[in-house]
Image (cartoon, rainbow, N blue to C red; front, side):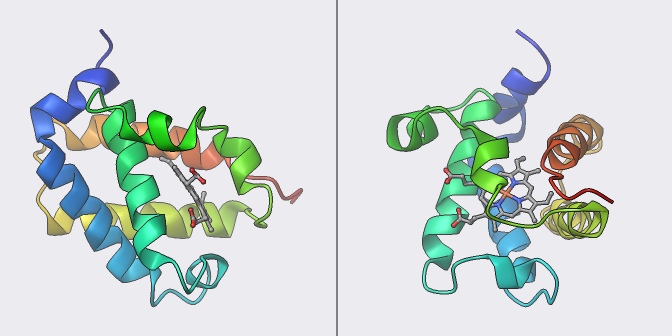
Length: 126
Ligand code: HEM
């Protein structure tokens, strides 16, 4: 098993969900990426990201059962994502990780996973 798929048991599902909640508290009031999210479904958005992270980090497979194959790049195509949007996503998630105090032994692993995925989501020629 790789390092990513043991994260859920190491960090704990509760803390991962708190981290996503802290992220969404910031996204909701963000002027650059906040406006991309469906304003009438904040709860659903938060659940989709939390379920995805829990699944990808080796926890329960709820995301796959409810959403199927992640196809993350395709699912982000409706939104214009360049370096600025990627960096904002990473900044807000970094603050969320600090708020819930993800342990320093796990934070760099999580951070580089997010950085890799966030960079893959860029779909705007710059
Ligand atoms: C690079 C900057 C990013 C932007 C601007 C962005 C924006 C969005 C938006 C607007 C949505 C639709 C919200 C909804 O589900 O209702 C979404 C969905 C989603 N995003 Fe991102 N995202 C970014 C990066 C990431 C990263 C790094 C991950 C994973 C680590 C991620 C995982 C997801 C997932 C799992 C969904 C729900 C997909 C589904 O099942 O429909 N996103 N994102």
